[in-house]
Image (cartoon, rainbow, N blue to C red; front, side):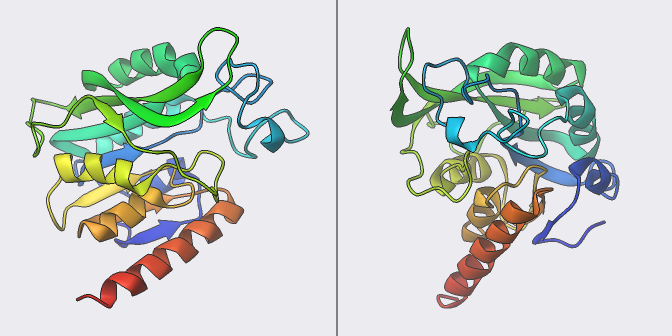
Length: 232
């Protein structure tokens, strides 16, 4: 088993091979997925347009297929445990199909209302999807009054192009895990999942292949842990 509360600068497919079967209590992740040539999910502008590299890609490492990593997530997750997997409109259909192909049971698709509309020729995009699924039999969330539409402001001054709010990740972690349990994020990005875990006294394991974002996440996590230690 890998060390807990550590971010690993490695391919998650290699990293997850080091995790035993049925050992993870919760998965919360925002995986890489396809964008249009504008760097969006189909809008006229594309918030990621200025991030495209010479290959027309937002990220250097963006070619992993859903069908490659989802079965590994299923393997390492404990029975009756939850997974939250974020996606956009362009990839929702494929993601739902591949999640079921990996033997997960889908509860429902949640909506993140991020209150930062993106210009579109039809409707202005102001939300993303979170597929809420499970391994094995159903288990209730801890806060059953949580609504399926989550109104959380998007991150300002992002350190990662698709950085997610810590408060959003805290909702998933608080609802589907207990203190000291293990949360896995195989696509850690700038570290929002890990930071939410530390605030809620959960353990985490994270992978980030891009060295630039790995360094950013490590710095954020170290600063967060130092801040938390002042109060305990």
